[in-house]
Each structure stands twice: as C-alpha cells, then as structure tokens.
Image (cartoon, rainbow, N blue to C red; front, top):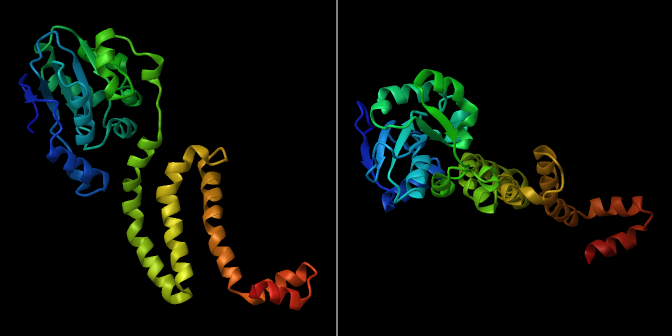
Amino acid sequence: MAGGRDAVATPVDGRITASDRLDHFAARWSIRRGEHRVAPGLYALGRPGPDSPVLVTANYTLSFDALRSAVAGIDAHILVLDTKGINVWCAAGKGTFGTDELVHRVEVCRLAEVVNHRILTVPQLGATGVDAREVLNRTRFQVRFGPVRASDLPRYLETGEATREMRTVTFGLADRAVLIPVEFVHVVLPAVVAAVLLYFLSGPLAAWAAVASVLAGSVVFPLLLPWLPTPNFSTRGAALGLLVALPFCLAELAGDGAVWARVGMAAGLEPPIVLAVVQQ
C-alpha cells in the first residue's frame, strides 16, 4: 500500500484476506520480521468526509489490520504513524509512536485540509508516547485516547465515551497463547542443539529434560501465568522450573540404586531393605 500525502488518502477497506492472514502468521513466527508494515500516511476507510473521525495507529500490519477490520463499515480517516513496523504499545515505549511523529504526520498529510473537526482518536496503549497538550499546541488537534481494544471502537465512536471495561487491559488465555510463537522461535534452535549434545554426553533423559525445560519456559509459563502461586515473574518461573525438573530428578534417582541406598541408610534403614525397595 502507498501512504497518503499532500491531503490525498489511500483507499482501504476492512476485509482481512487470506494474504493478510498469511502475513499475520509470518509476523507471529518472526518470519521476515521487519517487513510486516504499511506505509505511513493517511488512509480512507469507506467513504469518509470532512466530519468523519480520524483514527491513529501504527504502521505494523497487525495493528493496522486490527483497526481497519474492527471498524469495517464505518467511514473513517486512518492516520498511520511511522513506528518502524512496531505495534502501538511497544512503539509508544520506544518513542516511535510519539508526539513528534504524530505532529509530523498531521502536517505532512495536511490533515487540517481534510477534516473540519480537530480531534484525533489515539489508542489508549499509545498514551505513554503522546503528549496531548503538546500536540494541541503544535497542530491545534485535540488528542482523545480511545479504548484499549480496537474491537471496542465502534461503540466508543457511537457514544463518545469509554467505559471502565474499555479502559481495562486484560491478558486472557487467548492473548497469552498468541504470543507463544514470538518467544518459542528464539529458543527452539538452541534447545535442539542442547538436547543433541546432552543426549550424547548424558543420555536420553538429560536430552528430554532440556526439551521439557524449554517448553516449560516458552509455552507452559505464559499459559499458566495467572495460576502460578508466587507474586513475581522470577519466583513463578523458579516454581515452574522445579515442578518440571522433579520428574526427571526422580527418574534419575530411581535408576541409581547407590543413591537410594545412601538415602535409605541416612533414614536408618538396613541395606537389604533399601535394595528390596529399589528392586521393586
């Protein structure tokens, strides 16, 4: 897609095609990570007029597609900032979804000539990067922070107000699951190498232990995050690590009669009794 400039908006619709879904899949798995972006600029969703809302987003394809599909059927201007292909929340923290870029994009796209109103609807998750007062002073456009989720935008645009639920950041099971590939792709190759080395150095049990530890950290941990018993990430990770390691430790001990003999003698049991238990 080509970005808008000189008060000319690029037409776009709210449909998510098979090609879009393939792009989303590749982005989730960090395939061609830097290529999942649209050109910054002004886009026309439907047939927006001078009184239609201006919705601001990042030029990461998942962010852009989430917005346009959520408000499909609504005539709106979409102002896409150059966030270097990073989503709104992360880009706000990095500063690319920020005051200067928003001001620059309003000026470059000559937005004041496109709309009669002076309101920019900015995602709530971009608030850390945008100084609404400075944007107003420099562009005469007022920033209004919309809801957390793009899916709530139709209701927000209809009422002009965000409910408490719209302002609440949730991180449910589906949200956590969708992030698993992002983490997993970075550890799968080192995990395979470690498992192969451990197989030849210490046997199959050690290799499986390496695989289990990687799966626990990259897959199981995000899924079980709310139910792990400690209050912070480090101790939650440690608790899960101990739980995953326990079966392998027991299996190693079960295969070593000498270890069980020492444990039994420390407990006051006679060696024959210990050996009988081990043999069972």
